[in-house]
Amino acid sequence: MPYEPVIGLEVHIEMQTQSKMFCACPVVDSVSAPPNTAVCPVCAGHPGTLPVVNEKAVEYALRVALALECTVNPVSIFARKNYFYPDIPKGYQISQYEQPLAEYGRICLQTSQGEKIIRIRRAHLEEDTGKLTHVEAEVGAIHSAGKEALSTQTGRPYSLVDLNRAGVPLLEIVTEADFRSAEEVRVYAMALRALVRALGVNSGDMEKGVMRIEPNISIRPIGQEAFGTKVEIKNLNSFRALERGVAYEIKRHEQVLSSGGAIAQETVGWDDAAQATYSQRSKEDAHDYRYFPEPDLPPLRVSAEWVERVKADLPELPIARAKRYQRDFSLSAAEATFLAEEAALGEYFERVTEAGPIAARSAFAWVTGELLGLVNISNGGFESIKILPQDLAALLMMVTEGKINQATAKTVLAEMFASGRKAAEIVEAGGLVQVSDGDLIAQLVAETLAENPGEVASYRAGKLTVANFLFGQVMRKAGGKANPQVVRAVLEKQLVL
Image (cartoon, rainbow, N blue to C red; front, side, top):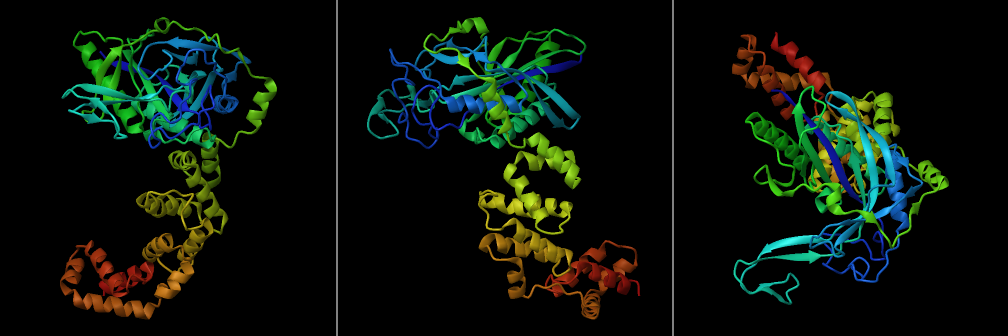
């Protein structure tokens, strides 16, 4: 029996504010900051403390909600989501449930099958939890600070709790079950990451857990309207793990149902080493959390004027930028999306095209090819490279004008990237100007053919691919500086003599 996947996503995005959601504790890097150094009685859940809403977190959430075309509710209610876990210091999480900040949005994706609209069910504010580190203890295991023993029993596992992240503002974005493939899920996650980065509300550093994705996956016979039993994969923080985890669960569901089994509603984790999911706990329903209004916080009221101010301040969004790149530079949908989702990359590309009469196709190829390759090797970013857009444009103009060839340009670019020197300076100092003298190239070709009589005979006997070898030999003789078009023309002429 053929099945179709039915998938919805919950994405938790940390708001990049200076302080936490309900207290004045600073938001620190959860990876590098010393544990439990950004904690106060409020975020530690001490009795008698009172939360106060972070206005900047609400504004950031509004930016995302409006960019997703959501309807912002003028009044939303904070609620207590009750469940026990060691990294929830209060024993409950302050979230929103029945009356969220925003609802009924949409985002348009560009997939391999064309455009796909994904509906946004809700976007609501909440606070993040702390972070647990599970350790297998040895005799006299010592705290990472080196000051106190945590266990004296061999093999007894223990957990370390870091509350630095507890109380950090989160925006949870919940979609409708509109996804039908693992690819669509990945494209959505990438588009959402690009969106929140463009809005300046999140760094997009997924490896640090600032954006965590939880797909809810079920399958059903094709043509059936009712949903199947869903399974949630918890806390995925990479696009690779997301796509593979979803694909794995789809296949597992199909195998279970095809063999006459039943899917258990549960929460699972993803084991990247095993490339498989593993069961964590039975999947809760909303009533299991015993939601009720947070008694220490009044209703959150968002005025129409505030919404309009935030809307007017929104930058050009990645989807709109991609469409502009397609229209203005004749890029494909995939190429335009690639540039638009990396704002610094797209802006650099635009500056190159503005700096001179550079063909957009050439600028795209060099920016996303040779230059991006150098950036990736250096582990840096386009914001900090030494080559200004106008300097790359000057290099490309030298290629267009025939002053240097493509191979030389790549060598010059690498030197520009390393030293920050201008292209013209490097070319002049290295004597790298392209040789287009027909007589000189004819001499080099003749010498090459004389040195390789066997290859010449093979070519004339019909093995035409030998011409590529001979071309390379001529270019070597010319130190890589010969005009390739002239070399190929002269080579072809002399080979048929």
